[in-house]
Image 1 (cartoon, rainbow, N blue to C red):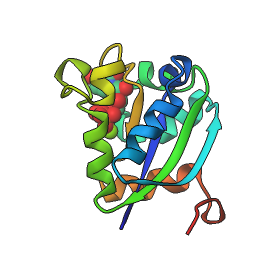
Image 2: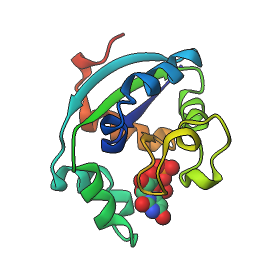
Image 3: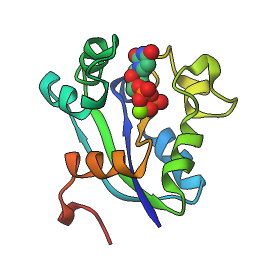
Image 4: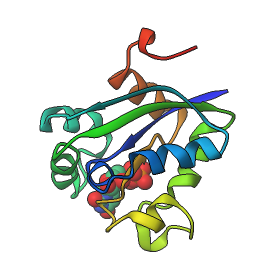
Length: 138
Ligand code: UDP
Ligand code: MG
């Protein structure tokens, strides 16, 4: 069993896709172990995406993540990290496989609806960023 963090980003919430995103994960046999909606500040977005601090898109990305409410969730299952990433599709929706969340709904490489941890190391940073131990169901 593996745990990962996923986010319905502000564009996904705005487009009324919270249920759609969760449903796609559930249909893959993954289980939601924690869930909440919140609106992060620019400073919190910068801290969450600290791995990208040297990237040219860091400022725009952190403005985007803090522009409106998001839904954050802990997802559990066998190979949960890879399964969530497969369900999301490639970062750039033009390169995302047909039937993935990003191919179906994303606007562009930035406004791409959904986040998923890319490794056990990033999940270990991202899950406690949003959830305390008592908020994650056993
Ligand atoms: N992003 C962007 N421009 C890029 C690459 C990424 O705006 O050239 C944004 C996009 O929202 C992406 C996020 O930054 O989801 C994090 O980038 P990463 O490479 O980690 O992609 P992901 O893991 O989300 O597929
Ligand atoms: Mg990433």
